[in-house]
Image (cartoon, rainbow, N blue to C red; front, side, top):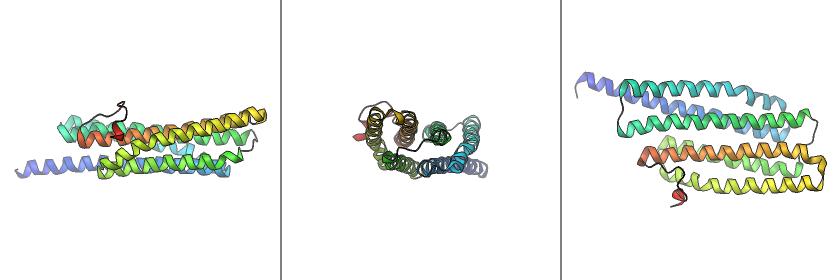
Length: 232
């Protein structure tokens, strides 16, 4: 390889690494949104809820910047095989991360609605929501770690764990339906809590999507929509 080609190769590697770094930066930002939204729910903290909502524009800006970076790499570098898979996966991952930010914002808005109406949180359910949020946050953290290390085993574990999160979400909904049937005064608040729980469940879905893209990068397999593929 001559000096000119070596220089171009280094530039290309730096651009790819820059994309990966920004993805992880965006992932850290949306992870902090989830944690803050969960804290706002547990403590009825409106200032924290407001911070989550206001952070959304930073997430959106990162998504646009990374997408532009992907377009630049494809247009200027014409990557092949593995590198092209990486760029395409990054484009999909940032979409999921942006949607995770949206779901965290939904959580914060749900907390705000509950507070504005002067309703007490369903105390018996507070711990379950916190646990659900912790599980979703851990799924996101591990999927990002799998992306950083291109670790397919961790990615497959995240995909499997999504079923447990779904079951926990359904259990919370059943519990809240029971509250509403027993005491109609809890209906409005319980519906808001269900909205928050649904947002957390969707965060888990998006974390699973990130993990699926790790499999695609490393193995070239698209395992989306293939039942039990992740459990093999």
